[in-house]
Amino acid sequence: MAATMKDLSRETGLGLATISKYFNGGTVREKNRVLIEAAVKKLHYVPNEVARSLKTSHTRVIGVIIPELSNAFITSIISSMEDILRKQDYAVIVCDCRSDPKREKEAVDFLLHRRVDGLINMATDTTGAHLKAPLASGIPVLLVDRLIDSLQGKVSAVVIDNVHAAGQAVQKLTSLGHRQIGLILGSPNLYTTNQRLTGYLNALQDAGIAPDNEYIRYGDYTMDGGYQAAQELLKLKNRPTALFVTNFEMTLGTMLALQHNNIRVPEDLSVIGFDKLELFGEIFPDLTLIRQPQLSIGREAANLMLDMLSSKETGVSRIVTLTTELTEGKSVKALKV
Image (cartoon, rainbow, N blue to C red):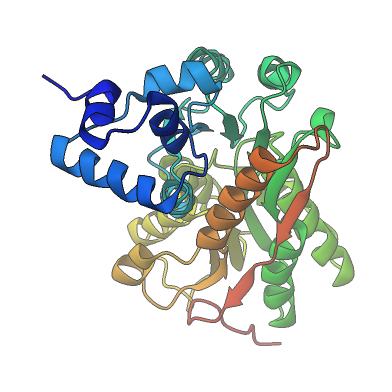
């Protein structure tokens, strides 16, 4: 039979109030702490977290809602985020909504019923309607990677400078003489998609190049989507001389499409991809990439959520914006003038 707090009380000779105070994070005398911890070890006592959460109104659980668990960029963020939260005695429940707003709303409801202390969301629903209930309840809500226009000023977020990221890539290509630059974006209307499109268009304008919608394709942030988008661009009569692909999975799909069409990189086509992950080096070495600081995104998200949980201020939002890095490889070449 599992040990109880009454067993600890008998073992230590301390009152239940002192033992309860210890387990709820209160300060107890050093000699009492030593007694309690020795008794816990001897009796193999495991605290009843459910009972404690009912008493303190805190579960020490953070809900995380993401669009795709199979996305390597997302899983790397979750991993670094969980490392920090775990060290602060917070558990994480991850819900994969599969890029479906209906599933995302169901995930929010599920986590609210589990009485999570905070929500971290890489949002699929661009309206923000799914977050109305937790915000109304005063639960800290943190957006990661994607902002929602209707919630700006109401929620905190950790994002990258997507406009600058796309601009870095396109400026690299225009500096090498490329004027027909294909762009493979994620799902339409998402914050990241719109921001990266803006960066692409700004860089073309800076180079005096008129944009051509024929060179812009959407690949829904999946490998298959990137593959299909690349296939469409390769079939154009005036095929692009360079491609910029805006996430890891779509870059993999694009490179597979090029291989299947016997397109040599960079001899026949220059390519800049997105997200420097270890897997790239194993499959497609020497790619020129826009590198997102995915581990830093996770760490910043975890620390910001901890700040929000410990803060007595409500309704104060903070936006943390991180920068990207252009990693030089051998997948681009200068055009002959």
